[in-house]
Length: 394
Ligand code: ADP
Image (cartoon, rainbow, N blue to C red; front, side, top):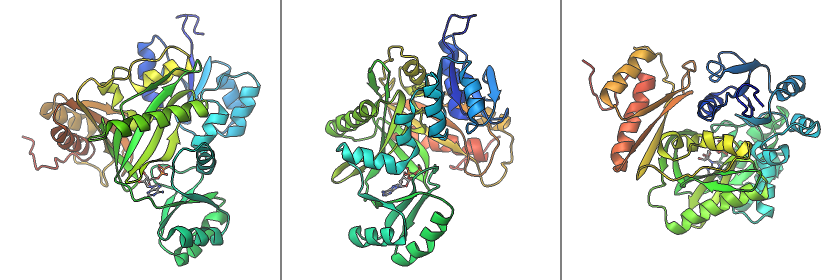
C-alpha cells in the first residue's frame, strides 16, 4: 500500500511498451506503477515513477522488487516459472499465477492442456527428433509448422517445413541449440482473430468485441475492431472459448486468445496473459482499456465495461523503417497531426530499428475502409517519413 495515497502498489516485471501503457492507466486510478526494467532507457523506464533496474531472471532481484509491491504482474512471459513458484511459496501475490502463466510460456503445455479440455486447436505433436517431425508430415501432409515451445515471439520460433529433407536439416540444429519443439498441422485459415478477455480473482469475467488481426511476415500490422463480417454465432463462440480458457486455467488479468478462423470453425493458436497488441485499440476505442482492466483484475477490483465507442476502431502498428528516415520523430509527429487531426498517436519512446514496434495509431469512425486506409498511411508515415499515397509536404 502506498502510504501517501492509501492505494495499492502494482509491480510489473518488464519495462517494455506494455508496462509504459499500464503506467498510463495506473496514473488515472491514482496509482504509480512500479516497474522492474532491465535498462533505464526501456520504454517504461523512461516514464514510470518508480523504476527498479534488474533482470527478470534474477530471483534475488525479483524477491526484493516483490517485497515493495502489493501484487506482482508482467509485461512479458519470460520470468522463469520456478522463480514465480518460489515467490508464491514465500507469500508474494503473483497474478497471473505461475500455473496459469505456464500456458502462455510453453506452447506444448498449452496445446496438451487445451486439447485435453476439448478446446479446438490444430493437430500437434511433440518433436524430440527428426523422425517425430517426418512421421507427422507423413500423416498430416507437408508443409507443417514447426515451433519452438518456448521463447518465440513475432513469428521468431516458427518455421514452415516443406519436406522430410528440410526437416532433417532443421531439427538437429534446433535441438542441439536446446530449443524444445512441437509441430502443428498447417491450418488453411480464412483469417486470424483475437478474443481478448479479463478475469479477476473473484471470478468476474469481461470480454471485449472480437477483433481481426492482420499480420505481415509474422508481425501484427493492423487490428480491426470489431472483426468485420463475423457472424453472431462465431463472435459468441470466440468469447465463450476465451472466457472458458480464462476460468479453466484460473487466469488473473488480461488474457488474449489468438484464433484461426477456418471453414471448419475456430481454432486456438496461442495465449498471452497480459495486455496484448490485439487490444491496443481499446485505449481509444473501448469504454475500458485493456491496461486499466489488467490493473483492475490483478487488484481484484470489479471490471469495467468493454463496449466499443464507435462502429469501427482500427489500430495500425508503427514498425521501424529499413533505413533512417529523412526527418526526426518530432517533425514526423508534427506533420501527422497537421494532416490527420483525429488520429490518436501512441509512441513508445523506443530506439528506431527496422521492423521494431515503435508505437501505434488508433482511428475511430463509421467507414472501415477509410479508417484502414488512413491508419496505414499514418503508421507508415510515422516510421518512414513518407506518405504511401504520394502526398507532399509543403
Ligand atoms: P509467435 O509466438 O511468434 O507469435 P505464433 O505461434 O503466433 O508465433 O505464430 C506466428 C504466426 O504464424 C501466426 O500468427 C500465423 O500467421 C502463423 N501460424 C502459426 N501457427 C500456424 C499453423 N498451425 N498453421 C498456419 N499458420 C500458422
